[in-house]
Image (cartoon, rainbow, N blue to C red; front, side, top):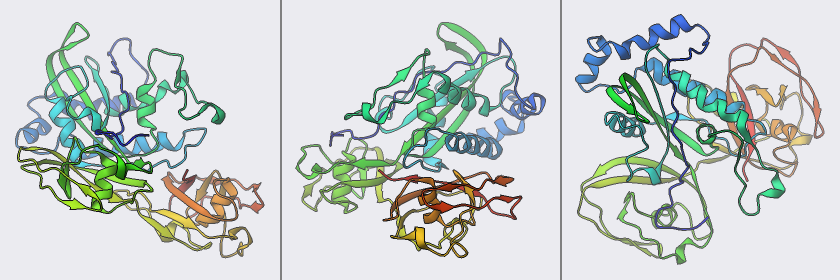
Length: 399
């Protein structure tokens, strides 16, 4: 990975088209069709509210899209290291709304694409819920083949046996931590040469966490601004400038901040930034939170589930959790664990860290009715049915 001038993670996202014909069987289709009627009725309450400057998507659809992304990401196998729990981002929603209103069947705008991932969906005729497109993006998994570890030297090969797999890889991109989507009704929209009279257009934008390599202090990539950085800036050099990381590299969290009228130059931590007195989109950088825990700490204690859901902080597990008292550091389940479980002993049980400890990411998933016992990596886990309250979780190694 290089410290290039544009260090935003660029994930190729190819267009997806879902026509209403042929019909596709959707569970509870009648209910889902009714949910989408609000986007088709131009005299309806949602469109009137939209004209008054309110949200580009309803709260119910926002939550449905977010929940489905997290559910599908939790099903990825083989498991990804550092799989982030997605949260909604209003700035990404606004950028998606701006593009959806153009009614252009292509990715854009060009100035934003280096900074985000993007998936598009459109349909006409029979109503479709927004989650129809999300599921269709994920279903490209049937054509995608994961590479073996020894093949990733230094980059993993991309294997897709179908026409496109990049919607799937965008949905499950491990370090994407934020999503924002918008829906627009487009009249006479040109979809690959066909004119659709009333197309319902869905745009979803994604923003990832970013891993900076060592040595970016010596790069010549430009950095524009201070605190708020212009979008053409190197992410990693901006992170060094702000003091989030040093020249050894590390993980950086990126937040889009919309347009700023000007950017101030300064010299910090060995990096001289450039000033700019023209309006442009901006971003800020922050450190990825890491929290030290004990062998007994549970997900219920660390980040109890509340809506809207938030990603649990990265944790650092101490040594010798395998020897911790199983009565106080329980492990309930296999692969998916009850949130009453010890995070670090579950991580050893799952094989994502060894008994000498290490960094672990936690991803909340839907509660299970049954958790299965097993013996793995020197730890016995418990079997429980219908546990009270709480959520479940998976653990991932940080590599």
